[in-house]
Length: 507
Image 1: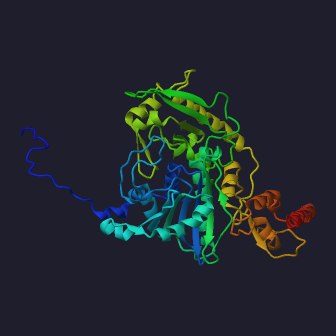
Image 2: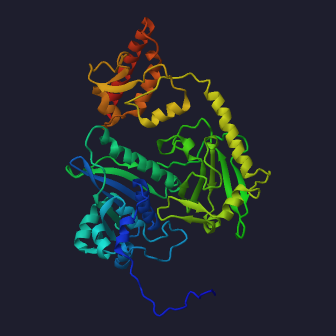
Image 3: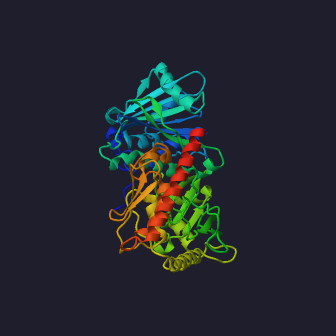
């Protein structure tokens, strides 16, 4: 049978409108952190210098989320286009958005109603609202009364000290309900993860003052917001010292058919690192080996080898920065959530092959081997450290991860808990060997925690107390020396906390 032309037999062309049901799949791959980051990307594209992310609670339950910025705002046409699914516009090379679905996908991943209130600062106010159920039916969008929009937007603009800007609001959210003591940490943990995520993705902008982001909780019942938590920059390659002489090294890879070479800044993470630059998201930093890819100073990929090589525990200290977006962009594919990047076959070959080399002839393969050697040497040193008793409930999980990563844990002793309980004001701590618990005085809890409570509150104080007392839970009994030391610690720490308490009252 002969070849048939693609146009053979065509009698007419029909325009087939997309099924609104496709909205059901929007945002399926978004986490809360990546969804909020997509909204912040829009703020950055709008020239915002300040962004506030606000969780709203009512009756103790998280019910809504807003993101307000001091960007350029939008006119009426721009507001319509922002709510259009899959809109295509001329994106500037500095823009973070590219697919035209970010706002909708991010919002519908966690809420059923999306509202946008905006003003370009000329006295005009524009509001649009999408309900997921209605969009799934006919793509309809509500146009909101400008007077209502002005009222809704006023508080947000005051919050960022601006006369123009945009507020994106999620309502009818699908946040988990808070039912018991353990789940009460959901909001605190979500804020913590969000601050880490935003601090990581935008660390360059945050560090040089181009961007300020804050996270807060607004209680509808009392119509007040709690103290804002400023997002701090987290540089995944910002280590004070290098792990090995000669690093980081810059390798240059030549990609077949490319107009320009690709530069790879290859780092070997110091094996004793324990700060936020290493333990990203509070997890063991060994999980974050691989490529760190930037576009316009925004971090797009946090680790992963993109099938160039395999992830392996022996490569835990290897992190490679790719900062030339123009060089790498023609050779990758990225999903709309900006959470997955696929290298082309040509790019993978160029990085893994002998063409990726520095001025001293060090190849990518040799770099990876050197990172493996540094880790092996550090593990030999770690094995000689004195084991400690495992910390349990009461000590923050991030701290527990660091302890277990840095020192061996004793398997012949039960874990230690740290808890609060009532005791006389002149006492600070008590140790109970039978319950394997360090008790701290409940009286000082508000001062030491700033009023924030939870199972793992006051992490700094609790960690110091654990390190101070851990060895006294070893063995079968306490001798006179142990009891005397505990009395000394209680007296000294009690005096210190009372001095701190009195000092704060004075100021």
